[in-house]
Amino acid sequence: MAFPYCVLCKGSKNLCGIHPCPLLTEIKRRMPPLEIKNEEIFGPSPPEVFVGRYNYPNISIGPMIPPVEEETSRYILGEELWGRSIEEVYALRSSLIRGKRGVNARSPGVDFLKLSSHPIIEEERLKGGERRVLESLQELSLSVKSVDCEMRLDKKPSQAIRPTVRRIEMPFGPTLSFQRFRVVENPSTLPALERAVYDYDLKAEEAAWELYRSGVPLEKVIQLLSIGNLGTGRRRRLVPTRWSITATDDIIFRRMKEEISTYPSVDSLMLFQENYAGNYIQVILQPGPLQFEMLEQWQKGAFWGESRTILHDYEGPRGRKDYAKTVEGAYYAARLAVGEYLLKVRRSATITVIRRITSEYWAPLGVWVIRETTRRALKKKPLIFDSREALIRHVEMTSKIPGVVEKSIFLKGMLQMTLF
Image (cartoon, rainbow, N blue to C red; front, side, top):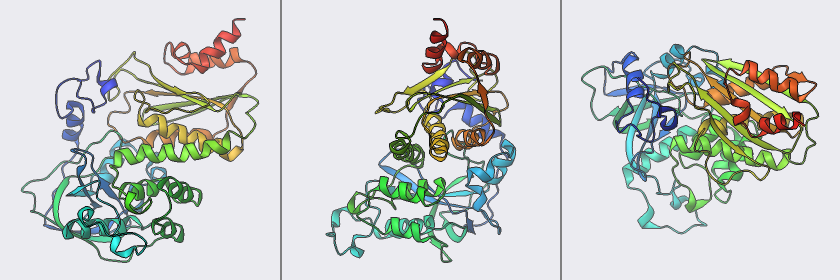
């Protein structure tokens, strides 16, 4: 059962005073458990690594390994998962066993003994076991194809364990502590990845942008940033996966914005639409400076169980300096997708994204759903409107969110213009 403030908490602020989140716990209970038969786990990682955030900076890191023998790279790419049912996504992802090993996030993510241009800082160096694990995970993150890996658990679980349910990250299988981990085959990488990772004078933002522009999947850039493979020398740090997702979306869009802002504005009123797994997305582009807003409503029966509150965050032409704490990660995911479209068509625009979440979305899949659904919407032929009045009427009728136009800053401005 959802509380009225679940839509504001989304399992992270403990507003109900119950820990862990009862809604996430209930979804986890409904998922089929995975039986782990051996202490030794051998299988092809997608490749995927996970960096936790609890008790930061003393966090946990580890690989994702399924005990199967098949190509698993599709397990991590949003474009490959999009269109599958929630049950299918969980079935695929719940087989990924997440290894867990403690480490300090502020320890440098690079071996300074290999850097003749940098001094050795003994007190900052990781212990031998931790360093070997980190180096193996960094090696794994360089691959663009699934890689055979081996992990020895602290002990074999005495019973089947249910998967891990997250609200921003993709779901995955059980989390288990491990003693040892190694990559047992050479990762298949790209020259662009190696240049970014082994250039210790390249800032993380510059590296992320260069990788993205060279065609490296966003999911790969997120992992490289998370596992401490990007940045300058001693400044390389581990970034919790949840933070690195939003950080990467933000970094890429801000670099896009520098170019998009120089383009002429769109010259018509356009509306794009798409839906997936109960996420109904509308993207509205209107002539004007590059600015962005996102509104969303979790309707009755949706995962967070709200029916009236409209969440809203926005930014003007100067962008925003603080975190979009109301819409959160979905804001950055949708904004990036629209930025990709504007960069492609070489136009600027004033952007409104409306997301309606229905009871079809009964379990969280992660913010990739918003990013990928928005991308798909923008690949469709848009509806073109001859007047602001026609656009406003259409949004009021099709969004199925009462009051969404009045809540919006950019649409409300359009509505006021139609009254004079």
